[in-house]
Length: 84
Image (cartoon, rainbow, N blue to C red; front, side, top):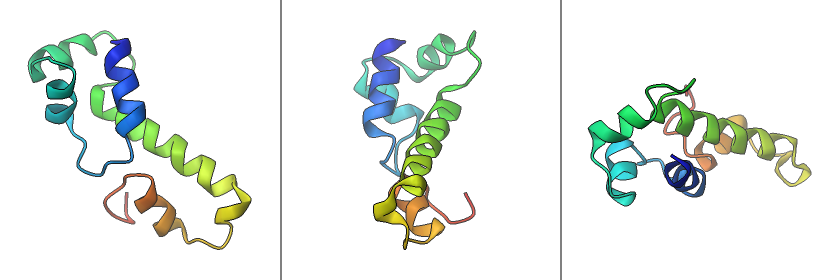
């Protein structure tokens, strides 16, 4: 699980990151990946979402990004739409 979490944290900004890519990168099947997270508070993709939100939060409070739009920060954080 730790290896998967590290991979998610390192690659969460990749908008194409999904369970299949995470599983393949960590040498797991998608089914086993989901099983690893079955007893946790968050699913795999909820963890990706949280990592992206954490990154967006850091940018929103960073003075260098004060003039950036929320949409721009969302895209920089791995979200694929402003609605996300």
